Each structure stands twice: as C-alpha cells, then as structure tokens.
Amino acid sequence: MKTDVLIIGSGGAGLTAALAAKDAGADVRVITKEYPTRSQTCMAQGGMNAALGNVSHDSIEDHIQNTLKSAHGEADEEAVRYMCSEAPNAVAWLDEIGVCFSRTPEGKIAQRRLGGASAPRACYAQDYTGLKILHTLYERCLKKDVEMFSERYLVDLLTKEDGSICGALILNMRSGELEHHFAKCVVLASGGYSRIYDKYSTNSTASTGDGIAAASRAGAKLLGMEFVQFHPTGLKNSSILISESARGEGGYLLNSKGERFTNELAPRDEVSRAINEQIVAGEEVFLDIRHLGERFIDENLPQERKLALLYENVDPVKDLIPIKAVAHYTMGGIEVDNKSQTSVSGLFACGECANHKVHGANRLGGNSLLEIIVFGREAGKSAANFVFCDEKCQNDFDFKKEKSFLDALIEYKNEIDFYQKRTELGELFYKKVGIIRKESQLQEAKQEIELLKKQLPLMGVKDTSKVYNTNLMEFIEFRNMLDICERVVSSALARKKSCGAHFVVEE
Image (tube, rainbow, N blue to C red):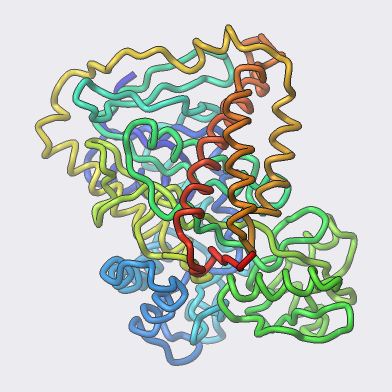
C-alpha cells in the first residue's frame, strides 16, 4: 500500500496535518491504533490560548512572555513567537470550519483564564473544548476523503539503505497480519508518554510513547524527555482529569483544614508541588467549586460535575472534590526544526510526540491545543512540500529489510507477568521519577529499568491467536514504555539542577 504522506496518529495534530497536506495536493493516509474520536485530544477540556482580547485586554506579546516564563528558559523564543502570533489565525480557522466555541453576550468567542496566564486567553467550548475540536477535524477529514485506517498499531518505521524513511510496518489488530504502508514521507502525531506512570496519569492507556520509541530506533533525536508535567487536579481515586477550567472559573484548592494554601492559577509545576507538599504532610487536598453555584457549573463546567459524580461519587455543587497531582503531559519528545522535520530525512512530527521547543520545562495551560493546530498545519504543509520538491522521495520504496521485533517473540518464554511489572513500573515512576526527584531514587529507577529490559525475553505473551490479540499489542506497548522510561531517567540524571517540572531536592 502506497501513499504520499503517511500520518501516524489521529488526534488533533494528526488530523490537522492530514487536512493541511490534503489541501496542498498530496495523497494522505492516516493510521491510528484506536479511533479518531477517542484520541487524547478530547481530554483537553479547558481551552485553547489566543490573544483575542474578547473579555479583557490582552496581547500577543503578553502571551509570548507568559509562555516563556512558564518554560523556565528551556523554550526557543523564535518558535514561541511564531506559535503565539499564529494563535488568532488558528482559532479563526477552527471557527470557520465549524468548531462551536462558547460565546460572549456580544457573540464573540468566549475566553477564560488558565494557570500562568496574565489575562483570560483560553478560547473554550464549555469544558469540552478538545472534544469539539477533534470531532470537527474528523468530520472535515471525512468530507475531504482523507484515507483512514483504524485499529492499526505502529510496530516500526521503514527505512531505506541511506536511513531515510519510506513508510511504516503496521500490525492490523483485527486480522493479526503485518502490513507495509509505504509513503514518500511520514508524519508522526502519535501522542505523548504519560502512561508510563500507569494509574497515576490522566491520559488514556494508548499514551505509551510508541511513535517516539519508533522514531528513536530509526535514528531520530529526542529532546527534553525529563520534563513531565503533573496536572494539579486529577481525581484522587481514579486520576481522571478535572480540567483547569474549574480553577480558571474561580475554583479553590483547600486542605483538610479548609485552608487555601497556594495560588490556584500559578503555573502547573508550582501548584502540583504545593499539593504534593500538603499530601506529604498528611493533609488531604480538595477542589472547591461549590460557591460558583449549580446553574453556573451546569452551564460552564458540565463535564467536571459528571466526572466527579461518576468516578468519585461526589457532587461538586455541594461537595468538595478530592484530588491529587498526576502525570498529564510530556514536554519532551522528538526534536524537530521550524518545519516539523526531524533529524531523519522523510520523517516529520507534530503534537505531543514532538518537541517544537515551545513548552520548555513546563507547558503553559491552554497551549497544548494551540500547538497541535499551529504545528499540525505546519507539519502537513512541510510534508506535502517534501513530497513535491525533494528528489529523494521520487525513488522506489526499497526499504532495508530487517528482522522484525515480532519475529523474535516466538522464542520468548512466559515466565514473568509483564502486566504486573507494568503496574510496578508506574508505582516506581510516580514515587521516584515524579513531582519531586532525588538522584539516589533516579539511580534506583534506572537499575530497575535495566533489569526489566533484561527480563523482557521471559515475559512473552500467553495469547497466540491472531485476531484482536490485545495481549500482543500491550506487550509491544510495554517494550516501548521501557525504552521511553530509560530515556526519561537518563535525561533526568543528566540534568542536575531543578528546572520547571524537573524538580530535584538534596538527599
């Protein structure tokens, strides 16, 4: 199967890239291991930043400075300026294609303030912003006849003898067969890796860093892997996300004594550490939105009320919401240039799997949806331009034939339960590679990962069937997670001083 541009991932970044490449005249195919409407983008509830000034005075320069401050010196100013300057155009484009943003009484796009912002800047659609953007993008792709292949799992990227990318090796989850999808270039939009923290993450079980691991094996450079953002308000028992919009609309953070202990709208790394300090001191922590009133909550925060009722059995209209800080977003990823090109010819990346150097050590709330639109469009255009302008991609799709990881699984034994090890790994990372880090604990985590990698041949799958073999897919995910964990720990050990989400304390 051949196409011009092969996109791995069908979240907001992937679908935006698909539309941009299609509009540029390229043939486009999207590969996704789930279904487009189930991607992680739907969990971005609070809003999308753009300095429109619809509610109060704001400016693009203020947006730039807020982003740079939140990034703790680790962002590239030129990239930040580009993203923030493109933000009004990105929102206008979404509005044009049908995203149903909430409105002010004057009919303008409504905006709310999120953590780290100097003004109400996040354009929102109640507290379903990412979901409504995602569904609109998907409908647009269907209208444009973008080719979609769901329930396909990325095993590895296909490379030519010169190391350039010419497609991907894909596992068809329905049939169990391997497929070779050839392309003149590949855009990775496969999401982040927060699920290495297992149950201590707001992310879906699909956020296992597959694209980043595959890109690294293909020779792409990774950057900033130590920077993992912890969201202050995950539900205590389930880690389900309660959107920052709840605090943006005036919610309080309280401890067991009923005391407010931090600035609720400070950058996420600061708020998460403050919550962690309370919990370590023996306090429980709660989000309080009762004072906002039932009518306001049902109109502006309906999803947050439903989630609290469903997963915590509390009604935010009259009850406090028990919360904890959990892994939410990964700033690190595949290093790309200003055209979303990786260090490997023919390989582009966008969205959470990519590091465009705009988030640095701590992402500003509301910038994730902005990034996937701005750089998703840029990646799609760049990929199409590569197809039409680069002589290399006019060659045949002769890939370097290598033994697949799946071929070796035949010899793997089933003596160790990798599901148990995955749970233990999540516990290990939350405690020792989490909100607060110590060098000795990072070293312990490093040793455990090395041991797990050595034991991998003893963790073979039990299910030998082909059709919908989720046991096999989850084992491949675990293998990718170990590769990602190794990079996160090594990057954390290399950075000796605290910086944003990477907070180191003395022994």
